[in-house]
Length: 87
Ligand code: HEC
Image 1 (cartoon, helix red, strand yellow):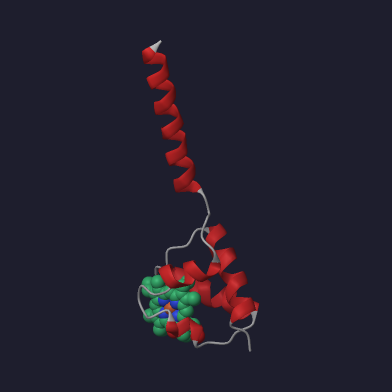
Image 2: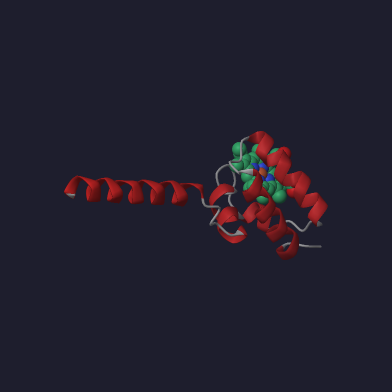
């Protein structure tokens, strides 16, 4: 009985750990602060004004340089940049 309970708990925590690691929980603003301040200050993108298409190509270029973004995070960030820092 006790073993079964412990096993169940271990499974529960195991799955919780996985779902936290995999959850795309970050919003555009925190992605910008976190991932776009590695090589230059986040002030650099914040000073720019671009259309959504221009942000898409800028962020792709930054990923080419080494910015760490998953496909899902890239979309969230490009949407945020396009709405927030527009011409
Ligand atoms: C791996 C390093 C690196 C990371 C991470 C990075 N950048 Fe850059 N970024 C650069 C370099 C180097 C330049 C200057 C050369 C250039 O413009 O290509 C630059 C220049 C820029 C510029 C000015 C030039 C332009 O096209 O307007 C913007 C805006 C910019 N980055 C946005 C971002 C955003 C948004 C992110 C987050 C997704 C980001 N960067 C993450 C390296 C990086």
